[in-house]
Length: 334
Image (cartoon, rainbow, N blue to C red; front, side, top):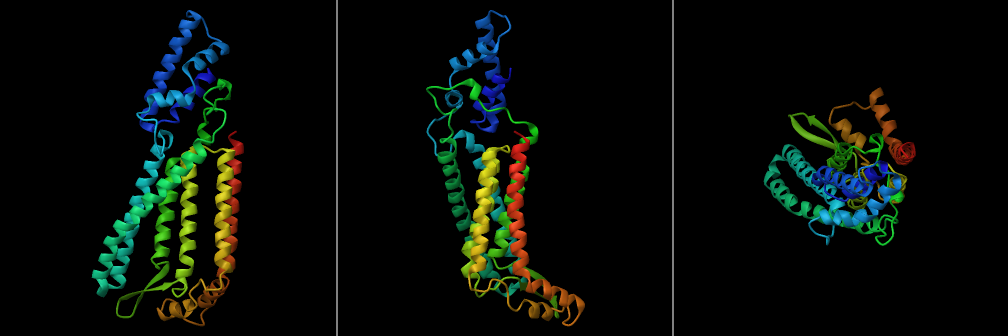
């Protein structure tokens, strides 16, 4: 019966993934035995199921019985996602830092010792900060998200009919999708943060150079906002991972985060300090990749001169599309 499946789902979703299958089987067996005892082996109707579920108690109380501890900063329903995100973030940081060190060693081999020291310091300092931020985000979700849920969290009076539906497979968000997005966001953020958001080239004498897209002189002004955008991107994926399925609530959350991201981009545009490298075209021509006066040069120059407008349009389109798709998926799978 659907009420049994919904009750079991409401319990196991609050437990780590490693426990869910075993607990689900045990709960279904227990409920079946209780129904058989109540009906003396006769078929049970919906009223019998509701009475048995009420006897078992609220799903949160039942989940607490299977949990090792009831006091936590991040509860069992979030702990598995928390550990997944933390591992991905730390591994992504380590990989990004290693890539940046490799790039620095190639472009500036005469400063190899300095780059190695920075590499070691980054491996120590950045993961600690990442641990703090990831923990803070999940603690916030635990406090404001999980504890604020109505109906199911009213332990004194609850109705089995109010149990959430077991999600359809089409509405489930793939964990691999969110993980890939987190890795890409962190790696891209590191490339920009390390000022290696650039076009690599080889000049005469086989020496490596790079033509940066961003203005190094004003980069310190924009860097906190870039970090904020990276944080919003990761937050969006964490919300997907925690929800596990497309819902209207998740769509609203994604829309709010997208709106904050768009506001951040508009703030960056409104700042007077130049964001793009003002010498990009001349530096690009100096590498020998393109020659001034050619059709290719003129095409790139036109694109570059309109770069800000293009970025704004693409960013606006991306944020709007993200929100629209989230609502579409949530409504489609209701």
